Every structure is written in C-alpha cells, then in structure tokens.
Amino acid sequence: MATEATRIAVYAGTFDSQPLVFAHLEDAMPGLDLGEVEVIMGDPRARLAHHFETELAQALEDALGLHTTCVLMFPEAVPEGRLLPDQSDRLTGLGVHRGVRHRPGPGGIAPE
Figure 1 (cartoon, rainbow, N blue to C red):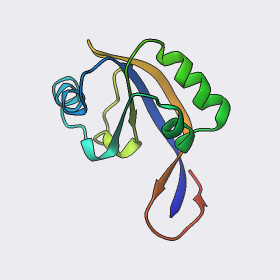
Figure 2 (figure 1 turned 180 degrees about the vertical axis):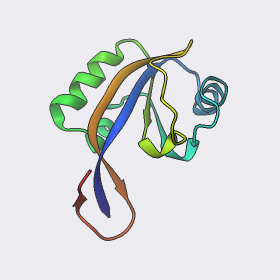
Figure 3 (figure 1 turned 90 degrees about the vertical axis):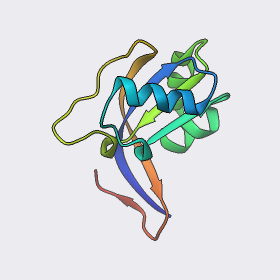
C-alpha cells in the first residue's frame, strides 16, 4: 500500500445516510469529485486514526460533538482553481489538516 502525506479538509454534519451526504455535496459544492471524498458515519475513531496522528484524530473526534457524520475531502476532490467553502447549510468545516492517504500499490510515505 502506498502512503502519501496530504492536506485533508474535514467537515462535520448530521445525516441519516451516506447517499444523503453525497446528494448534499453535489448540491452545495458542484463539480466536486465525490470519488475523492470519504464519509464516516458512526464511531469515527478508527478511520480518523487511519488518516491523522493520534492527537489530531482525537481532537477531530471531539470537535464532531453531537454530529453523526464526518466528511474528509482530499485535494483531488476540488476542481483546479476552486476553493472549498468553510461550511454549507448542513456541514461545518473543522479545518484543513495534515494527514496521510493510503492507496493500493507499492510505496511508503511520499512527500507532500
């Protein structure tokens, strides 16, 4: 598995299902490559730890508060020249953080 350092935009929201998250993203952020978005519902601990250092993963989990959904957007999700909004009517931005992305294939951590 190849691991690369990257910046990950993190959002918190409350949704009943992943399809509703993706439908909202299509409306709120047209042109977003949804294949470059990860939606975490339920207990986020393990999946956040997969992308972020322990302290940051814990801080993000705490920042979710009572929200039921965490959305991770990798840089490739955003069309070139566009910026992600800080929030939408259903998502609150928790910032853009340094993390790692894991992809199938050989390799170690590639430079950012």
